[in-house]
Image (cartoon, rainbow, N blue to C red; front, side, top):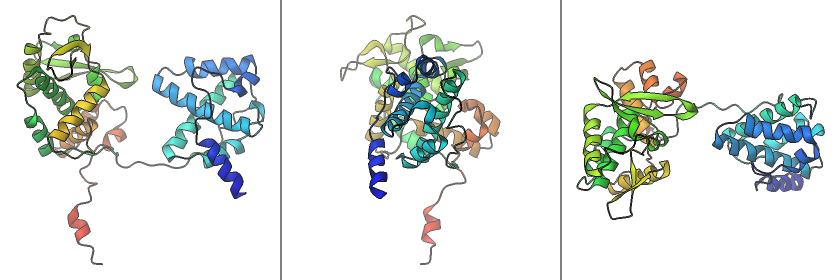
Length: 327
């Protein structure tokens, strides 16, 4: 029995299934209705490319596992889904993602009459409760030290200062900052604003505070891009170490590497990331008594419980506590 379980665990380790562009063998064997359901599931129902890739891999991996056990689509039962999740290596969130993908996929199979019932519908996921996010917080002192450490004698330094300033003073995600175009920084009459394209197709406008406006002005003037087309990227990549900017925009990965490099030069902990600014900003505002609803609006969260995950005020375990253990 133990040998069988070990063999099945090894079978789950590789991807073991088709990617989003290939039809799994069990889907092909299921006929035109199953093939239509597969295409509808991935390319009709899911618009986010990352979700499509993750769900495609999850379902492809499960179907490859079922194929190895001699099962076809109509004979897959809730027991098979449950055993698969028990054997699946990884964390509870990973298993919940796989179960969600299977539920959606089999819903489409039922809708297209490729199978009679959804075997994943009655399978329960493991309980998983998050009381605090895992992203480490950067302190106010560390953020100030980082900004002061940037050499603004060149346009690249001014660019990096503006990017980090946006991360600090708007709580925006680095992906949203990378999407900024010239038209997204504008004068609204009484103040300057930044318009962010966030996750889920949401668009948000956030006022620019005076010091961030100064950062952006100091960057745009020497960069020589003030008269660029509205759809041109706001933040441009640089030509290696020359200090000259290109016409191409920085990607989110470019910005993340830049922030990590700047943090390293400032002597900050390696575990910090661009998302750490978002945690620090939310915690700082809540600590000042800003209402949760206002902070939620700034962060762009649909649910206030998500905003609370970023709050590090009351959940810190200090050294003073552990030093008092009398053992």
